[in-house]
Image (tube, rainbow, N blue to C red; front, side, top):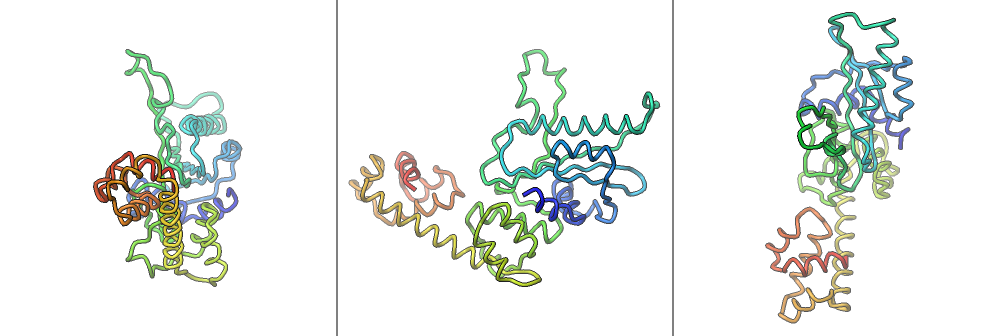
Length: 301
Protein backbone atom coordinates (compact mmCIF):
# COMPACT_ATOMS: atom_id res chain seq x y z
CA UNK A 1 0.00 0.00 0.00
CA UNK A 2 2.98 2.34 0.51
CA UNK A 3 3.42 3.06 -3.21
CA UNK A 4 -0.27 3.87 -3.75
CA UNK A 5 -0.32 5.92 -0.54
CA UNK A 6 2.54 8.08 -1.78
CA UNK A 7 0.95 8.34 -5.23
CA UNK A 8 -2.44 9.52 -3.95
CA UNK A 9 -1.70 11.33 -0.69
CA UNK A 10 1.59 12.71 -1.97
CA UNK A 11 -0.18 14.96 -4.47
CA UNK A 12 0.20 18.50 -3.05
CA UNK A 13 -3.53 19.34 -3.01
CA UNK A 14 -4.36 16.01 -1.37
CA UNK A 15 -1.49 16.26 1.10
CA UNK A 16 -2.37 19.68 2.48
CA UNK A 17 -6.08 18.79 2.59
CA UNK A 18 -5.35 16.15 5.25
CA UNK A 19 -3.87 18.81 7.51
CA UNK A 20 -6.61 21.31 6.66
CA UNK A 21 -9.16 18.68 7.65
CA UNK A 22 -7.58 18.07 11.04
CA UNK A 23 -6.53 21.61 11.90
CA UNK A 24 -8.98 23.91 10.13
CA UNK A 25 -12.12 21.86 9.41
CA UNK A 26 -11.48 21.94 5.68
CA UNK A 27 -10.76 25.65 5.32
CA UNK A 28 -7.99 26.14 2.77
CA UNK A 29 -5.50 27.69 5.20
CA UNK A 30 -2.60 25.63 3.90
CA UNK A 31 -2.07 26.06 0.14
CA UNK A 32 -0.66 23.37 -2.15
CA UNK A 33 1.40 25.91 -4.08
CA UNK A 34 3.52 26.49 -0.96
CA UNK A 35 4.31 22.79 -0.64
CA UNK A 36 7.69 21.53 -1.80
CA UNK A 37 9.18 18.08 -2.06
CA UNK A 38 12.08 17.78 0.33
CA UNK A 39 15.03 15.59 -0.66
CA UNK A 40 17.54 16.74 1.95
CA UNK A 41 19.56 14.41 4.15
CA UNK A 42 17.24 15.38 6.98
CA UNK A 43 14.20 14.03 5.21
CA UNK A 44 16.00 10.97 3.86
CA UNK A 45 17.05 9.99 7.37
CA UNK A 46 13.59 10.49 8.84
CA UNK A 47 12.03 8.65 5.88
CA UNK A 48 14.27 5.69 6.64
CA UNK A 49 12.23 5.36 9.84
CA UNK A 50 9.21 4.44 7.66
CA UNK A 51 7.35 7.73 7.70
CA UNK A 52 5.25 7.56 4.55
CA UNK A 53 5.39 11.10 3.15
CA UNK A 54 7.44 14.10 4.18
CA UNK A 55 7.17 17.50 2.52
CA UNK A 56 8.30 21.04 3.30
CA UNK A 57 5.87 23.93 3.63
CA UNK A 58 7.09 27.48 3.12
CA UNK A 59 5.20 30.73 2.54
CA UNK A 60 8.06 33.18 2.96
CA UNK A 61 7.61 33.78 6.68
CA UNK A 62 8.12 30.37 8.21
CA UNK A 63 9.31 26.90 7.36
CA UNK A 64 7.42 23.83 8.47
CA UNK A 65 8.21 20.20 7.98
CA UNK A 66 4.98 18.25 7.67
CA UNK A 67 4.97 14.51 8.20
CA UNK A 68 2.04 12.28 7.35
CA UNK A 69 1.89 8.65 8.39
CA UNK A 70 -0.70 6.22 7.06
CA UNK A 71 -1.39 3.20 9.26
CA UNK A 72 -3.50 0.25 8.16
CA UNK A 73 -3.38 -1.49 11.55
CA UNK A 74 -3.46 -0.48 15.19
CA UNK A 75 0.09 0.05 16.42
CA UNK A 76 0.37 0.16 20.23
CA UNK A 77 3.72 1.97 20.01
CA UNK A 78 2.65 4.65 17.52
CA UNK A 79 2.74 7.52 20.00
CA UNK A 80 6.35 6.59 20.87
CA UNK A 81 7.25 6.15 17.18
CA UNK A 82 6.00 9.62 16.30
CA UNK A 83 8.01 11.10 19.18
CA UNK A 84 11.09 9.35 17.78
CA UNK A 85 10.44 10.64 14.24
CA UNK A 86 10.17 14.21 15.41
CA UNK A 87 13.21 13.99 17.70
CA UNK A 88 15.34 12.54 14.91
CA UNK A 89 14.20 15.27 12.51
CA UNK A 90 14.98 18.06 14.98
CA UNK A 91 18.42 16.74 15.82
CA UNK A 92 19.25 16.20 12.12
CA UNK A 93 18.20 19.78 11.40
CA UNK A 94 20.35 21.13 14.22
CA UNK A 95 23.43 19.18 13.13
CA UNK A 96 23.06 20.23 9.51
CA UNK A 97 22.50 23.91 10.15
CA UNK A 98 24.61 24.73 13.22
CA UNK A 99 28.27 23.87 13.70
CA UNK A 100 28.58 23.79 17.47
CA UNK A 101 25.52 25.28 19.13
CA UNK A 102 22.26 27.01 18.35
CA UNK A 103 22.47 30.83 18.61
CA UNK A 104 20.25 32.43 21.21
CA UNK A 105 16.69 33.21 20.11
CA UNK A 106 16.93 30.80 17.16
CA UNK A 107 13.67 29.09 16.30
CA UNK A 108 13.57 25.71 14.57
CA UNK A 109 11.04 24.76 11.88
CA UNK A 110 7.84 23.30 13.25
CA UNK A 111 7.40 19.57 12.72
CA UNK A 112 3.82 18.44 12.54
CA UNK A 113 2.92 14.75 12.26
CA UNK A 114 -0.50 13.41 11.30
CA UNK A 115 -1.35 9.72 11.62
CA UNK A 116 -4.00 8.81 9.07
CA UNK A 117 -5.55 5.56 10.30
CA UNK A 118 -7.35 3.76 7.47
CA UNK A 119 -7.97 0.41 9.19
CA UNK A 120 -11.41 -1.06 9.75
CA UNK A 121 -11.04 -2.00 13.41
CA UNK A 122 -11.34 0.61 16.13
CA UNK A 123 -8.12 2.34 17.18
CA UNK A 124 -7.64 1.00 20.71
CA UNK A 125 -3.99 1.90 21.24
CA UNK A 126 -2.58 4.86 23.14
CA UNK A 127 -3.25 8.30 21.70
CA UNK A 128 -1.25 10.07 24.42
CA UNK A 129 2.08 9.22 26.01
CA UNK A 130 0.39 9.22 29.43
CA UNK A 131 -1.72 6.28 28.23
CA UNK A 132 1.43 4.30 27.38
CA UNK A 133 3.74 5.03 30.32
CA UNK A 134 3.37 4.43 34.03
CA UNK A 135 3.07 7.76 35.84
CA UNK A 136 3.68 7.36 39.54
CA UNK A 137 1.63 9.41 42.01
CA UNK A 138 3.26 12.75 42.73
CA UNK A 139 5.07 12.92 39.37
CA UNK A 140 2.13 14.16 37.30
CA UNK A 141 3.33 17.78 37.16
CA UNK A 142 6.77 16.72 35.93
CA UNK A 143 5.45 14.48 33.16
CA UNK A 144 5.80 15.85 29.62
CA UNK A 145 2.68 14.91 27.67
CA UNK A 146 2.74 14.04 23.97
CA UNK A 147 -0.33 13.26 21.90
CA UNK A 148 -1.01 11.93 18.43
CA UNK A 149 -2.65 14.02 15.76
CA UNK A 150 -4.83 11.12 14.70
CA UNK A 151 -7.44 10.90 11.95
CA UNK A 152 -9.64 7.80 12.21
CA UNK A 153 -11.79 7.07 9.17
CA UNK A 154 -13.86 4.25 10.67
CA UNK A 155 -15.74 6.40 13.18
CA UNK A 156 -18.96 8.40 12.97
CA UNK A 157 -16.99 11.64 12.81
CA UNK A 158 -17.11 13.19 9.35
CA UNK A 159 -13.96 15.10 8.43
CA UNK A 160 -14.14 17.96 5.96
CA UNK A 161 -11.01 18.05 3.80
CA UNK A 162 -12.02 20.87 1.45
CA UNK A 163 -10.64 18.84 -1.48
CA UNK A 164 -12.82 16.53 -3.60
CA UNK A 165 -10.36 13.66 -4.05
CA UNK A 166 -9.53 13.22 -0.35
CA UNK A 167 -13.11 13.90 0.70
CA UNK A 168 -14.30 11.17 -1.67
CA UNK A 169 -11.68 8.79 -0.27
CA UNK A 170 -12.65 9.55 3.33
CA UNK A 171 -16.36 9.09 2.59
CA UNK A 172 -15.88 5.88 0.62
CA UNK A 173 -14.05 4.28 3.53
CA UNK A 174 -16.79 5.33 5.94
CA UNK A 175 -19.40 3.79 3.65
CA UNK A 176 -17.47 0.53 3.28
CA UNK A 177 -16.78 0.18 7.00
CA UNK A 178 -20.31 1.16 8.10
CA UNK A 179 -21.96 -0.77 5.23
CA UNK A 180 -24.40 2.07 4.79
CA UNK A 181 -25.19 4.46 1.94
CA UNK A 182 -27.10 7.65 2.62
CA UNK A 183 -30.00 8.34 0.29
CA UNK A 184 -28.53 11.69 -0.80
CA UNK A 185 -25.32 9.94 -1.89
CA UNK A 186 -26.88 7.37 -4.25
CA UNK A 187 -26.13 9.38 -7.41
CA UNK A 188 -22.99 11.04 -6.12
CA UNK A 189 -19.93 10.90 -8.38
CA UNK A 190 -16.55 10.05 -6.88
CA UNK A 191 -13.02 10.90 -7.95
CA UNK A 192 -11.60 7.92 -9.84
CA UNK A 193 -8.20 8.04 -8.11
CA UNK A 194 -9.95 8.14 -4.72
CA UNK A 195 -12.01 5.11 -5.77
CA UNK A 196 -8.90 3.11 -6.62
CA UNK A 197 -7.07 4.11 -3.44
CA UNK A 198 -10.14 3.11 -1.42
CA UNK A 199 -9.93 -0.30 -3.11
CA UNK A 200 -6.21 -0.57 -2.26
CA UNK A 201 -7.00 0.14 1.39
CA UNK A 202 -10.16 -1.99 1.81
CA UNK A 203 -9.53 -4.73 -0.81
CA UNK A 204 -13.22 -4.40 -1.68
CA UNK A 205 -13.67 -6.19 -5.02
CA UNK A 206 -16.79 -4.23 -5.93
CA UNK A 207 -14.73 -1.03 -5.90
CA UNK A 208 -12.16 -2.64 -8.18
CA UNK A 209 -14.88 -3.80 -10.60
CA UNK A 210 -16.36 -0.31 -10.75
CA UNK A 211 -12.92 1.20 -11.30
CA UNK A 212 -12.03 -1.20 -14.10
CA UNK A 213 -15.37 -0.69 -15.87
CA UNK A 214 -15.16 3.09 -15.68
CA UNK A 215 -13.22 5.44 -17.89
CA UNK A 216 -11.62 8.79 -17.10
CA UNK A 217 -13.49 11.23 -14.92
CA UNK A 218 -15.69 10.90 -11.85
CA UNK A 219 -17.53 7.65 -11.20
CA UNK A 220 -20.91 6.72 -9.71
CA UNK A 221 -20.34 4.15 -7.00
CA UNK A 222 -23.06 4.18 -4.37
CA UNK A 223 -25.89 2.26 -6.05
CA UNK A 224 -23.62 -0.71 -6.69
CA UNK A 225 -22.33 -0.55 -3.11
CA UNK A 226 -25.87 -0.24 -1.77
CA UNK A 227 -26.89 -3.40 -3.62
CA UNK A 228 -23.81 -5.18 -2.30
CA UNK A 229 -24.57 -4.11 1.28
CA UNK A 230 -28.22 -5.16 0.90
CA UNK A 231 -27.19 -8.57 -0.42
CA UNK A 232 -24.71 -8.99 2.41
CA UNK A 233 -27.34 -7.94 4.94
CA UNK A 234 -29.93 -10.35 3.51
CA UNK A 235 -27.42 -13.19 3.64
CA UNK A 236 -26.70 -12.31 7.24
CA UNK A 237 -30.42 -12.26 8.03
CA UNK A 238 -31.06 -15.61 6.36
CA UNK A 239 -28.06 -17.18 8.04
CA UNK A 240 -29.06 -15.75 11.38
CA UNK A 241 -32.65 -16.97 11.04
CA UNK A 242 -31.50 -20.42 9.93
CA UNK A 243 -29.06 -20.74 12.79
CA UNK A 244 -31.62 -19.28 15.15
CA UNK A 245 -34.19 -21.89 14.15
CA UNK A 246 -31.79 -24.84 13.99
CA UNK A 247 -29.78 -24.05 17.07
CA UNK A 248 -32.29 -21.94 18.99
CA UNK A 249 -29.49 -19.33 19.24
CA UNK A 250 -28.91 -20.88 22.65
CA UNK A 251 -30.93 -19.88 25.68
CA UNK A 252 -31.63 -16.20 25.06
CA UNK A 253 -33.46 -16.62 21.73
CA UNK A 254 -34.91 -20.03 22.66
CA UNK A 255 -36.64 -18.40 25.58
CA UNK A 256 -37.68 -15.52 23.36
CA UNK A 257 -39.27 -17.84 20.79
CA UNK A 258 -41.01 -19.79 23.55
CA UNK A 259 -42.48 -16.52 24.78
CA UNK A 260 -43.84 -15.80 21.32
CA UNK A 261 -41.24 -13.33 20.02
CA UNK A 262 -41.99 -12.80 16.36
CA UNK A 263 -39.49 -13.59 13.60
CA UNK A 264 -39.86 -10.00 12.41
CA UNK A 265 -38.18 -8.74 15.55
CA UNK A 266 -35.31 -11.17 15.06
CA UNK A 267 -34.92 -10.15 11.40
CA UNK A 268 -34.76 -6.48 12.33
CA UNK A 269 -32.25 -7.15 15.10
CA UNK A 270 -30.00 -9.19 12.79
CA UNK A 271 -30.08 -6.46 10.14
CA UNK A 272 -29.09 -3.84 12.71
CA UNK A 273 -26.33 -6.08 14.08
CA UNK A 274 -24.91 -6.68 10.59
CA UNK A 275 -24.78 -2.93 9.92
CA UNK A 276 -23.02 -2.49 13.27
CA UNK A 277 -23.81 1.21 13.63
CA UNK A 278 -25.79 1.04 16.89
CA UNK A 279 -25.09 -0.28 20.36
CA UNK A 280 -26.74 -3.40 21.73
CA UNK A 281 -28.61 -1.21 24.19
CA UNK A 282 -30.05 0.90 21.38
CA UNK A 283 -31.06 -2.18 19.37
CA UNK A 284 -32.64 -3.74 22.45
CA UNK A 285 -34.76 -0.64 23.02
CA UNK A 286 -35.88 -0.54 19.39
CA UNK A 287 -36.73 -4.21 18.74
CA UNK A 288 -37.67 -5.31 22.25
CA UNK A 289 -35.18 -8.17 22.64
CA UNK A 290 -33.19 -8.37 25.85
CA UNK A 291 -29.42 -7.84 25.86
CA UNK A 292 -28.55 -11.49 26.55
CA UNK A 293 -30.57 -12.59 23.54
CA UNK A 294 -28.91 -9.96 21.37
CA UNK A 295 -25.44 -11.02 22.50
CA UNK A 296 -26.16 -14.63 21.57
CA UNK A 297 -27.69 -13.53 18.29
CA UNK A 298 -24.60 -11.46 17.49
CA UNK A 299 -22.35 -14.49 18.07
CA UNK A 300 -24.30 -16.49 15.49
CA UNK A 301 -23.92 -13.93 12.68
